[in-house]
Each structure stands twice: as C-alpha cells, then as structure tokens.
Length: 287
View 1 (cartoon, rainbow, N blue to C red):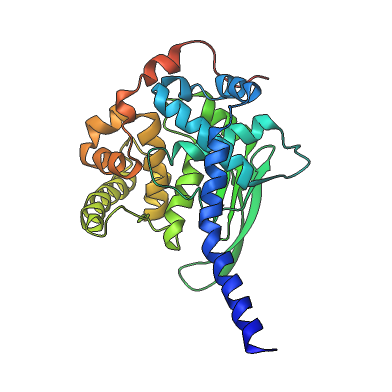
View 2 (cartoon, rainbow, N blue to C red):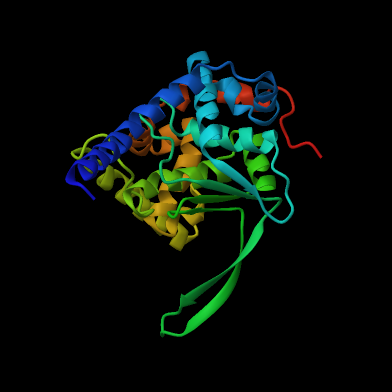
C-alpha cells in the first residue's frame, strides 16, 4: 500500500479517536437540552420521593443527567422481567444522584444494568482458613462488576427508594461501587479531585472503618450496617447510603466522615428537607 494512503489512513484514525470525546460531549449537551418527558416526571414523582427534597436546580440537573444515562446505557431484564420506563428511570435517577455537581463521564466503564424481579442467587467459590475450597450460595439484592455491569433486584430497588430515611438503598450502594471501581477495584478509594486529598481521605475513612469493625466485634450498635465492616470497598458503599438518606445523623455522629463525603459528592443533603419528603404522602411500593 502506498505510503500516501497509509498516511491518510493514519490521519483519519487520529481524527476519529480524537473527535470521539468532542462528539460525545456534543451529543450529551443535546440530550440534556431536550424537554424531560412528562411520563418520566410522573415516574420520579411516584417512585423517587427523594427528588422532592432536592433544591430545584439539582432536580433539573438530575433530569438532564437521566436523559444522557438512559441514552447511553443498556438495560436487560433477567428471569423474565420486562424492562419498562419505570424501571429504567427509577434506576437511572439513583445512578445520576451520585454524579450531581461533579465533572462526570457518566460511569464510563458501565455498559449494562441487569435487573432481576427480586433477590437473586449466585454461587461463589472461596477458600477457608485451612486452604479448603468451598462453593456457597448467596442471595443478593445487587452487585457491581468492574467489567461494566450493575445487577439489581427490582423489588429491593423499589424498597430502597420508597423509604428515604432508613439508610438502606441498594441502588445507591451499587452505583457507589461503580464510582469506586473507576480506579480499577472497589477498595474504598475512588477518584478524588486532587492527589493531595487522598491522605486525609485515608485517615478519616480508615479510622471510621476500624471503629465500625470494633463495634461489630463487640456487638455494639452503629449508624452503619455491619456489612460495611467487611472491607473498605463495602464500607464506602454503605456510608454512601447513609450520607444520602440519614445526613443529619451522620453529620452529628460522624462529622469528619460526613465532611469527606460532602466534598467527594459535592453535595450537602443535610440542607435538604429529607424529613418532609419522608413524611409527606404515601411513598411505599404499590402492590
């Protein structure tokens, strides 16, 4: 092949790959500028009482992000579940809640959201303390894979969305894992704005993680689920649930931790009227 043609092909490849970020940004601006469908607004009203507590500017930002997220991510129903706009919008709202006010590439590694009707069973291999391999069955409400998938139980997602102040929300938990996994693994150290922030982050979260492990060992109560004591990645996901759903308690009992998460998420849920959202109207799952 003549050198001229090879050169032209090389230039075309450079232009193609170099232009992709520009094209993606242009497409996202266009999606965010579109009117938010009335049917989707009704879904948020029915399934996401959390949104009512948010300031108007964040509600508008959330809706714009949802439009991009739904255009770029695939949803797959499992065990016969039919994917509807209700499922897509509700899950997308949780995902986009975590990227408000932040420079975001919309979970760049995430390609698919797999949704089961209810809790699902997985089999896991593990090796015990004396080196014997075992296979165990686990019943799960959600999982996050670094290979580009989030798996959720629809019923558990609904239950987490319906009660906004119990500190338990499987969708927030799994999408927090996705943020954590942007560094390669869920290790409790997601991408921070500046490298200098990691030292303080490690000190605050490390101390709180150790305190939770000690509480679990003693059987003492804690604001955080015992599951958060499993490892630093689970701790980050668990405290993210509490940050969004029980900000007043977290700010009171764990002020340094609340401040770290507020800086990371660029949000202050403590300033929102979550109590009003939790006690106005009936927001529990419809039967």
